[in-house]
Image (tube, rainbow, N blue to C red; front, top):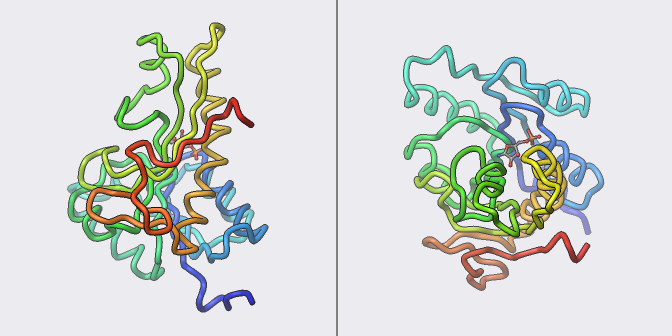
Length: 223
Ligand code: GRF
């Protein structure tokens, strides 16, 4: 039996740009692969392409322009109020390009997911694709993790490994990583909404069992 709308986990997705991960998750909800309700898409940038995509999908959108706030603290508290109006069970950061304060990350601890384009803990921060190439790594990838106070530092839920090819440059590598993002983010959100994925202390748990530091690892070479 399907859960009624009222009982479904409520998801809020935060974006700043293209919103392709938001679309991948929204598609999975629409196709009922994820049994949940997306109750709002929030962007901190008025020009975010993802806002148009969300509206075209019939999703509720909100805008909160960070440039109108005097401090990071004020912005984060206003953002919490906006999110709380939507009463979410899960908050998903999907290309949300703002560093969040500890007040924010503590408020949503255990129900806040992010996607980062590297095999965390490697390459926290920006320019991950170029950094993996500069280091002559053989493999690169992407991670979905719970968000804690430490930037890109919370426990990993799932990773996809992407091999680095001789012909690669940052743009080519980024494209292949992006394809994997659209696979693993809906999986992590589905697990969370089914009550299978949770966070305890600094561990991610799947079905109650602590995951390895990497999280569940998928290898794009096996697809
Ligand atoms: C992705 O590369 C993600 O890993 C990073 O921001 C980008 C968002 O892309 N955190 P999109 O807006 O979902 O297309």
